[in-house]
Image 1 (cartoon, helix red, strand yellow):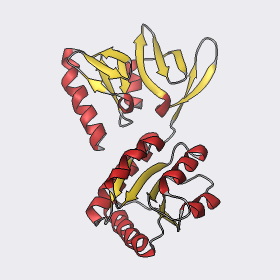
Image 2 (tube, helix red, strand yellow):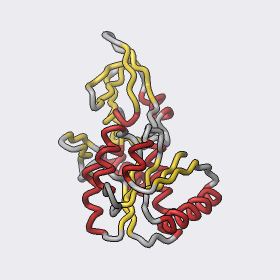
Image 3 (spheres, one colour):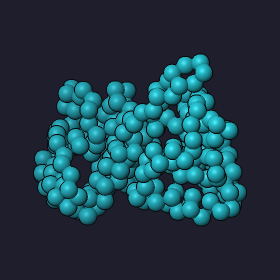
Image 4 (cartoon, helix red, strand yellow):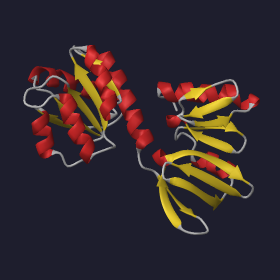
Length: 234
């Protein structure tokens, strides 16, 4: 796991690196750490490949928000967590798809919680791919591309951000393959990518403007899966 800290306060970075060492030991993971003094320093050396980016908002030369905008032009996948003295800046993180924000000073327990969330984000956004063979083509799709998958007789229809693909397969085998990948069944024959769920009503699951039915016997389990996903446990 490659983690970068971008902050003009050397003492703050030193403390966060110590937090990271402790968190590594407790979680049993290994991280490669990079540090940058400001946004320009980061961009000058940015070649992609970072998993998590802890980015200060208030920096000289180039602030964190503008730095993040430029990073996003090069890297759509890196997990960005803003660090700021003023919480009001946090809302701007949505502009660059930031995962979270931390208000300084940062205690170890807050840092460890944000790190766990970031690592979960990285895991769920790892581009695990599927090669789908339809009647017309062979196409590779990744789990973050998939909105939902539904059964159609002896076929599975993958509804993705780039279109729909109909391939032969069984839902039972697919459920085994996607277990632990952030998916849940809303009714027999339909599996939903929980990252796209925007709401759950009594009878429906909402994925933006898409509405899918949720069966009565699946409703409770689907809600539980969604809450686990939001909490980082699925």
